[in-house]
Length: 191
Image (cartoon, rainbow, N blue to C red):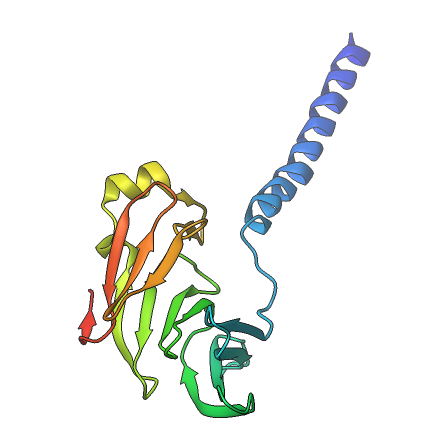
């Protein structure tokens, strides 16, 4: 009788140890699903190839790569030589930059939290944001819930979306067919 109780106690003890070891590992695995590697320099170009922007992540005051420098360059149509247009410093690292054939820049998402905060930032010719849009100001809650895959730190709203510039706006057509028109000129900050 004493032996049966002892074996049962050992089994309970071993099960408790396994649970204590495996539960933290499972939690770490879930958290790791949303981790991102450090951003690296990337280049985005206009559809005609005459304008391009190099996004270079820069360390903030704490040393994290949370800021960026955008170096805008264009090609001279006659000579083909590269001409520096300017440099823009941002307080975030854009996950993607859409470049118009006229050199207009539109930043999509923050690299570290896509779909949260400002999802669309239109930069003026001086590099100052002229239009800022949050996801909730472009899509309804129902559209976000039904069409946007979401994790702890990202909302994948722009996957497979089409982007097109018109004279005064950027038109985004989502993968489910919603058309979003973003004005390129007015100062507009959504709260």
